[in-house]
Length: 295
Image (cartoon, helix red, strand yellow):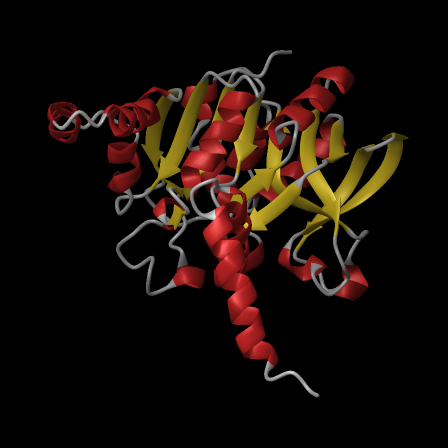
């Protein structure tokens, strides 16, 4: 099985980041010098993905514009001899074959994935959530693809989280297969600590069998009155093999202000243009907040 296509659900309203996301898609908020969604697309491309479908809504045409050529800007840069800037601007349009479909109603992640049915056809495919940026030596979605190909299964990305945090995610019931790969036997959406199946949560990356589409068509609204992908996956793991890959890497939830700031600081510290300045700035600010030294 070769995974050639990916879906990026990016139709959410960004309510955790208001008012900034009132008119600017949360996926287009700048993380140092690139919008959030570009990091996610770059991860997919680095994993060997050829075609990417972004699921949007009517307020997010800025994403379509960003990954297109901009003749007027390119001409100005060319006339000014700004060749590096010109290459940067054009390269965003050449990252991958990027397509778009709208989720016309806010019906949940499961419904957003179902909107990709015609694009995917009968192939296995990757899903990368539009809020989650992953930093890893091997792209996280590549780690999932490798596991899915090895076991002939769908795969979900997972890491251990605390009992207090599990209510933000889907909790997995798992059985070990090898070092960092588990068989999934059940899952539940945003459980309370007394109802969680384990501390292993699904975190933002999937490789799915196309049979998920038939399941999602028949999945009724669940948590929050929306069609939950977790409910569809719960059915899938009872019909087919589903594995969980405990991926190596750091996840940033850029859909909330603290996660976005954490990512901004970490990426800025590692960026050659901003790292030295930011390190000095943070040291100076830390001195100010720590108060005067005691004699």
